[in-house]
Length: 427
Image 1 (spheres, helix red, strand yellow):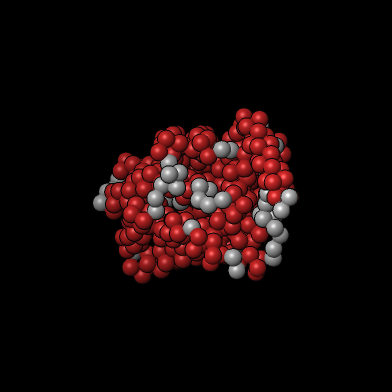
Image 2 (cartoon, rainbow, N blue to C red; image 1 turned 60 degrees about the vertical axis):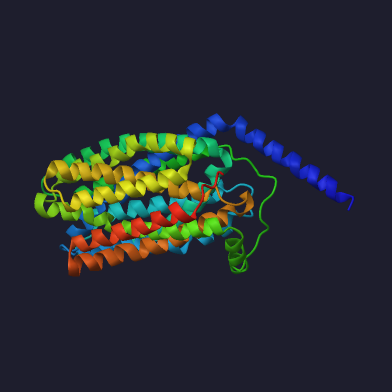
């Protein structure tokens, strides 16, 4: 019994030192996270934007919408399988950055292989190689999503996260928009080829690699307490109790998963527009520019709104904007309205991604944060795996409109659950 006051004092003192270090290194870590996120997101948006990769896969597959859905579903399958592994790798460690370098490096190697396949393989072999690379990219991305989100929660206080993510994504959007326009205009041109797409993805590899290297300068604090080390099977046995203890978080991640099913439409927006406008390099560059620039500008608004009113409001508003933009695409035609649609979708997707990730960080206690991130990401990527595959089947057999209507239904249901059943966690 005599040890209890000493232990409490030591824990309190350790927590004070931890918070002091966070504040002392805040400016440095904020700037490094900003640079890392800007370069990393610029590169990964070139790969994952709903323009270049779907059009490239359509080219390699000879016009198969189903293969577009399969390729993106495989990527999401990889992301679904590994978040819990990522959490198990780091939740007992006081420093998680070394593990982050391993997973981040593996992701970038996958991007490099996607680029090289277009240079050295024929269409059929390149398509197979890219699908395998997207699987491995997703496997490491699933782990990195847990590790780097947890790292941000350690070094950036909750009151500054909206500002950081908004400014980071703003800068990434500026560079992404410019790079996308240059890539579409100069690398692809009027008659896109596998070589042109490969140059774009090679550029993505270079940008993301430089961004990862910046994290060598980060100063990661060591928290006073961490979870005890457990094997993955034992840790999974704790999940039912964790979910019962936090029903608001449980309802939130289920709603997030439902809304994530709305992503099924993402690769088919550009293919639908291309039916009437043609998938030229100029169109791909233009709409990618609009998509990324809209996300760029909106991030400043989303970030500021999140710091003032919480990420829950951003989550709801971004879903509403996503639905409106999809409806506009269904009932619009012509280049101008197509660009407007991609502006709306770009802004909505950025708001949804930022809010869904950051909301996860605001539930429960710090020691359980890695496993909560992993649960939310796994459930989200289950939907992300099923969504593109379902979208590909719907597009192949019933047309693009069926994909968009199904996407809208999932977005509305997910938003309604958060609106009525998930309170603002900051309160």
